[in-house]
Image (tube, rainbow, N blue to C red):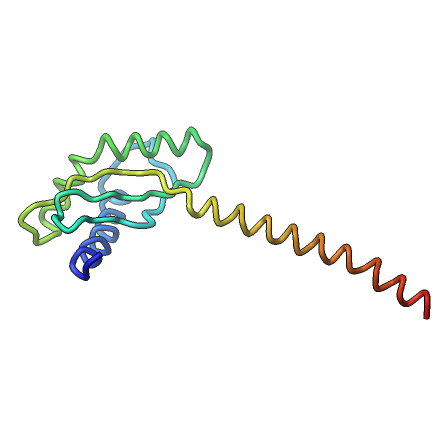
Length: 129
């Protein structure tokens, strides 16, 4: 990823978040966060990774609403971005935060189990002294 595509991706993430929160009035859009925007070197498309807080139905509804509003969003991007061509927007589900939470819970559980195993060992050592 070049410096230019990284800059465009960061700018798109900020502008998309602002447009979706303030301009798109679709009730299907729930609590979301744009986690990453991947832009290829030709700048013709943009993969927008969206994390949605809620059930699977709410996640699907939010993504469907964003996909249906892609043209509207591009129209609002045009005056904000000083680019010759506004990229086509492709919204994708990003479950990385959910995955990270599952890993954190598993690690916490393992840590608690290890602590439970150590407690009986240390008390039996005290009893033998």
